[in-house]
Amino acid sequence: MEGLRVIEHPVLARALTELRSTDTSRAAFRAAMAEASEMLAYEALRDLPVHEVEVQTPLEATTGARPERITVIAVLRAGLGMVDAFLRLMPDAAVGHLGMRRNEETLQPEDYYESLPESLASTTVFVVDPMLATGGSSSAALRRLRAAGARDLRLVCLVAAPEGVAAVREQDPHVPIIAAALDRGLDERGYIRPGLGDAGDRLFGTE
Ligand code: PRP
Ligand code: URA
Image (cartoon, rainbow, N blue to C red):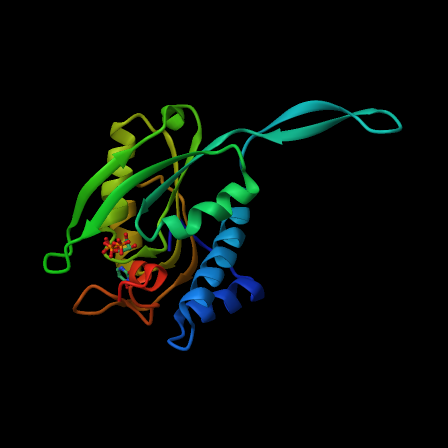
């Protein structure tokens, strides 16, 4: 789909299979989410601008590169499971939080918390949420971040539904979306099929 980059890699595929399986324990689910998120972060950071820097090796002076600072925005709760992966690769990233709870009757997102760093307008902003289902939560997050001054936004998720990708791109036609999988579609309850169930519940043990 236009605007969506699905990362294909055998190690990522193994982590995603762990995430999908009902045989996976809570601890293994957390570990697989961390592993998958790190690979997605690595790919999502691929075109980050870098500054050239001088570096002295033991033998001579040469030039090296430092990536620009970034901002990571976790869509609560499940997005929390992806933040540390970004911080392992980009340890000085600023981190913001947007609390969004999908109303399971209406499937509309309800926001309940917001904490946004000042770096929003001046850095590349990676919005992390493992599930892109109807796209309501991600669209609301992107809308809020644009209103707060963000200009360069990327959405990183584990599992996307075609409906969610289309909804996000309709609202925000230029936002790149990076995912580990594009699944078949949504069921009548708005769950991604085959999906992995409720990511937040499996991550935090609230199922
Ligand atoms: C889940 C998920 C996304 C949203 C996706 O969160 O983490 O934020 O649903 O669905 P959508 O694309 O249809 O909006 P949920 O609202 O269940 O909250 P949680 O992370 O606290 O479990
Ligand atoms: N939220 C989830 O956690 N999973 C889905 O399949 C849809 C929304």
